[in-house]
Length: 282
Image (cartoon, rainbow, N blue to C red; front, side, top):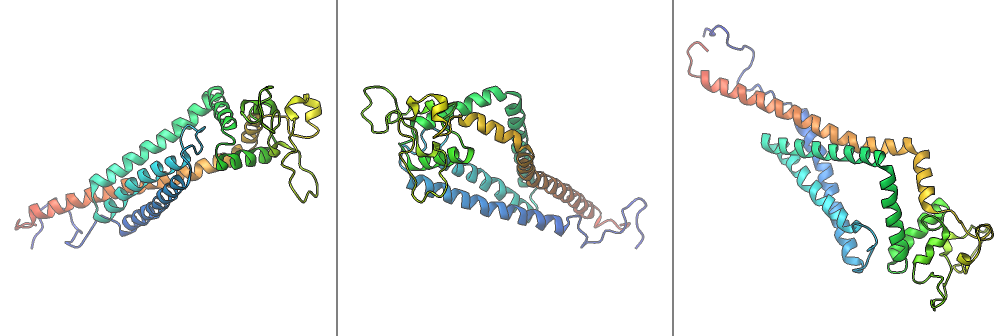
């Protein structure tokens, strides 16, 4: 049968523009993060149920709640990607791509704003640390977190070791009946070589001592400056982490857009075939 001049050649009924490689690569990519999101929600729910009501009350957001929220959002987002790629649904794929682009831009904006307004970010960190000091004895997980941070960064308190006076148990006021009055946690103490048993009372009365005298027994520098110095000395590591978070998002956006364009081309081809199937010149 003769072909009408100008009609496209080489595309049979079985031809498809949709690449199985792109389609299933995007599907398994989303499936992986879909499973991760369910694990995040499960861990967040478990942590929330196992903790007391006052758990980590000093933080702006309870990490368990944050984990649940991020997990649910990731679940919905990757669900769109999974079903959209499997069913070749343009609406779901564009929703997935748009949401992923928004998340990427928000992360980028947060990083830029954190760098530009570093003083305000430092003030917020200081506020969080001071609140953590106040609630040190209220929650065991918070207490372990603070102790780990002070030992890891060899520091004590937010700005100095005397910040621990903000805690009702370590306060230096005369009417404080606590046995830990004017003390600091054991995690502030300098490490003792070959120590078999940890002396949890090594910080007794340290706030009453002057800086030089106290520095012989405990860390006297605050954790804020230590944290800032650690960030400055590990910029490449933090950049690598940021890149590791950005690459999967960019890959997801790229694959979804490629698949959307292929599906649109396939729809055009099907529409063309339907229009000209009864055409005797086709």
